[in-house]
Image (cartoon, rainbow, N blue to C red; front, side, top):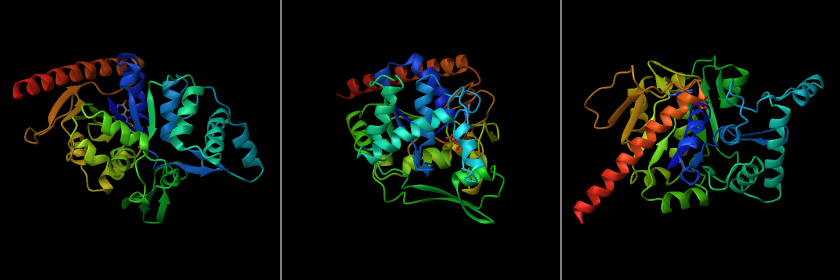
Length: 320
Ligand code: GDP
C-alpha cells in the first residue's frame, strides 16, 4: 500500500497500520513542503513525525518531536539572544544534525532518511520516502492581511492567528519526485493508495502537485481518510486553509480537494455526505485518541483493502 503522509493525523494512523499490515506493505510518501533550515540544520517536520512514530518514540501529546526531550540548547540560544523560530528539542536536534551532515556529504534526502530510519531501528522493509530529493526547495507561503508568511512563521510564531487570504507554494513546479517515489509508483501499479488524515492543503496538496505524481495516482485505487470531522479539523490549521482556498470545511470539502483521483472516502460515523458524488463513502470512527482507535481503523482498512483486491481480481478474470 502506498501511503501519502503529512504530520499528526497520518502518523497517528501509522501506529495502527504498522501493527496490522506487513512492513513491506507500508510505502510512505512524505510531504517536504514545510521543511526549513534552522541554525544550520534541516528540519523536516513531517518526515521526523513519521520516523519517530514508527520508531515508537514520538511525543504523543504534540505528535511532533521526541518523548522525554529537553530544550537546553534552544534555551541557551535564547539566552545568547539568538532565539530560534521553532522549539527544537535536544534529542530532536540530533536527528537534524545527522540529516544535514549526510546531505553535506552528498547523500540525498531519501538516503539520509533511510539511514536515520535504520538508526532508529525501523526495518528497511518499511519505506519512508520524501516526496522530492530537492531539500527545502519548496516553501509553503501563507498570505495574510499583514503580508506573506512562511508556514512555520504563521503556525508557530503567530500561532495560526492571522486571517488567511491564500496559500501558495514557492518552487513546487520546479521540483521532481525522487527516484524512489517514481519507482514505487511505477512498480506498484496494482497497489492501493491511502491518503492519510493530514492537512489536504499544506501536507497532501504539495505531494499531489509534484510533477507526475497525480498522473500515476489516476490509475490506482485511491482511498482517503478525512482529517475533518464535523465542521472542523481535529487539530492544526487545515480548516482555515481549506476555507482560504475556497473549499468547504467538511468531509465533502475533503472530497472536493481530492476528487480528481479519489475512489473512496472514509468519514466519521456521525458525519453526513451527499449521495450523488460518485465516490464510495465509508463511515466509521476516525477520531484517533488512543492506540486502540488507530488499530481499529487500520483493521477496518485492511478488511476493505482485501475486499477491494479480491473484487478487482475477480473482475479481471471475468474480462479475460
Ligand atoms: P497541520 O498540522 O495542519 O500542519 O497538518 P498535518 O498534515 O500535520 O496534519 C494535521 C491534520 O491531521 C489535521 O487536519 C487534523 O484534522 C488531522 N488529524 C489529527 N488528528 C486526527 C484524528 O485523530 N483523526 C483524523 N481523522 N484526523 C486527525
